[in-house]
Image 1 (cartoon, rainbow, N blue to C red):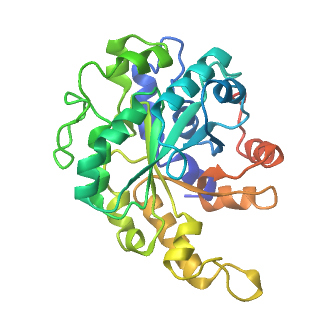
Image 2 (cartoon, rainbow, N blue to C red):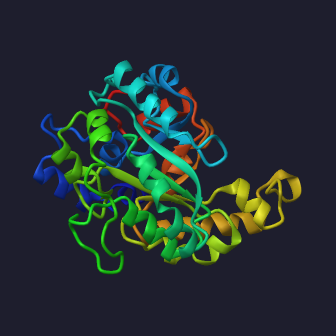
Image 3 (cartoon, rainbow, N blue to C red):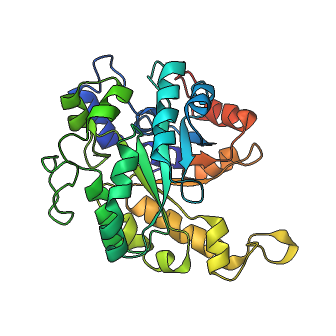
Length: 316
């Protein structure tokens, strides 16, 4: 298999299954990021925060999804709801989607099962603002990750997965997010599920495997059903490895950091997850060939170069 074939192959089966069933009435997914990943495209994201006015301004972003920061920023669900309403009112996107996809980071961490079991409601409250995914920080424990996935499923969701247990979303939760997505409440309940576990799901769940404890369990957390992508979080990884700036001699990446990145990337490839990494105009093609599927920190020139290389046709 060539490098470019690798970019398309891991999730092609999920994409084909979804296409066979019909993604939406208009032939498009709700979550543009998933639609592009299914097509074998590398995607690019930008940061987001604030409320309605920020949502209006972000509706025309050239990036493929917005990472809404609540790990170190305010945990403010009212602001997030207003942000999503601003995206709707400022849309649709040039690609014909109602809004850009939005994925939130949370102050709830994947450190152990007890912590996530007590705080899974935070995952649910974020999702029910109408967003399209969660990025779980410090994903150390596969049991904690399972609770995040359960928090993003309804009890009757298919396919049922014994090792996950029953979903935890309840009736009544579908009201506001179905309005944001522009679908009926019943349709929301059908699509509000993690992809690619559910080929028709519109939730994209990710992991930050970003410290030495998470690194030790990289294969285990990456193997949890319902996860779609992961990253190695170089900032926190460097601190955890007692390498605050992450570099060795000659300002090159420290060998321990290179090893950490390689281990997380291998776990992603082994479990058909999209790997997230910083991309620049000088290295975006190299990163795509290596297997990077989600580009962080990309400016307009970097995205244009990467999209041309991968034959991107969807407008942005």
